[in-house]
Image 1 (spheres, rainbow, N blue to C red):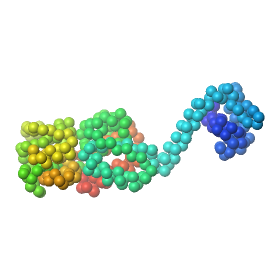
Image 2 (cartoon, rainbow, N blue to C red):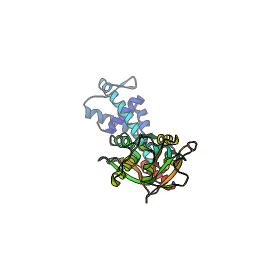
Image 3 (cartoon, one colour):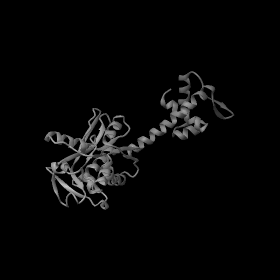
Image 4 (cartoon, rainbow, N blue to C red):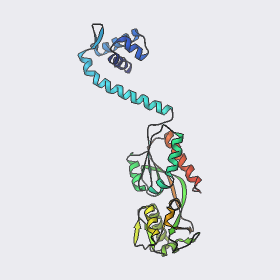
Length: 299
């Protein structure tokens, strides 16, 4: 049977009469009758029999109806999806985000996005950059806002901003407005980023290039945990500027510029085979704008 046949047979199933099916489908009753007869001729058996003025399904039709009901539900879902796409609102945008960015910029991005797309549904989950990449490769999310670092053949990365790295510590190590060389920072009691973290990898590469030894009695994966540890006076740490300037002021931390400057790129990761969507493009545009407003535009 063709789709038009199925549509008419289902309308008769729902309404119980030819006239009711005609009204439901905005057709004339003779047209409905003609399409039903065409379907029955193609199948080689009757689908409905008239009993006391009402159409009753045949035994063959009773076997078909459960599948017809499933198809009807799928068509309703398809109609809803196409309507959403026409209005510019896809059903759901799944976003993954590095924890530091989730706290520093994501709340503002979410607020602006939902003001632009009031009917959109947004799922945002904070994960480490390495986990974001693997989840995107498995198509468990649509886009990821991450620090540049781990590469994957199935993932495309588009840089949006460059964020400077800064040294953070208690006032006993340095004062406000200090400018420190990287070697000076590493010579202090140091709270190291985890070696698998993007900043950890960057520091390891810098030490290798200069022939330095990175010594630390403690390494911390979460940037906020590194700040809290630094606030105890145990040592200094290095984080991105966004994280440093959103730190709890009660920690009484000092922030020092590192010279020459070290920067970490932030961008959007997507599965290479993932098709573009208007919602995703708008979300990425907002990420770029918010980061630029924070002074983190690409140089």
